[in-house]
Image 1 (cartoon, rainbow over the protein chains, first blue to last red):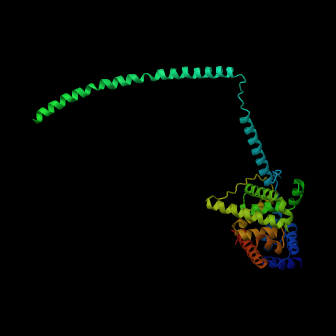
Image 2 (image 1 turned 90 degrees about the horizontal axis):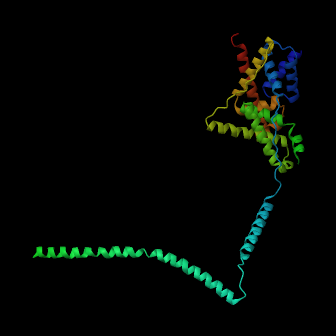
Image 3 (image 1 turned 30 degrees about the horizontal axis):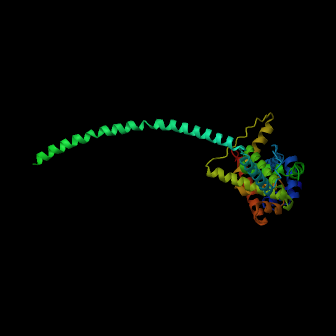
Length: 161
Length: 169
């Protein structure tokens, strides 16, 4: 009786026509009771299904707290930082106050002192440039070569004649 | 939605995602990575979760697509996913050996099925989804699901009968 029913169910099962409840019944039959030899194949099939149903996912889930700061807030913050930095740098250049003199005589003395310093340094530089004279001397001695050329020209002229 | 609420939401079906991923990718490690990836994606888009009609079906579809992508990229790299779940099964009883062996055969036969049929058998015979849910997850019509399921079940039975009778008949 039971076997008859099971055989019918198996046929329906293969045609994909069984309901979930009927499939549960098949599963129960094949995993629990003694199965006749000609249906042995289904025993391993349904056992496989129920064994596989028990496999679980055990890997940890690294759920990070996603940052809730919206994008437009981020841009606002960036703009503020840029502005603040701009003000800070601007103020710093303005603060480059070197001071001033109230007494004109003192100012004159300071100016002449610094000018004098500039002139001495300048002269030092100029004196080293003096070595350029040596080069001039060298080129002037090269002029003697002209003399030689004159001589050769005279020789050639004579040959032409 | 905080972490606890999210975990409560996904815990009823996270194993199903994993089992489906494993059905497609075969290797346990790959399936674990895939499931993790899918759940993290879901978490990162948690603001959209209330808009989904069926989070479970949606996640199943996500997992299926993710695994298909994985398989496709593996194929284009010309790499085979190597099945490397080494298990140390302690078997004492002869009966247990036999049973494990036949279960192993079922697994081998399942692996030979086309991906779609494999998924349908997984969803129906292991996870016990109804046809409407399966057709939603796989984006197929219910009749096609039924036909593919019937075909897969018959193939499995035929191949299993052959291996059972091997050397006997």
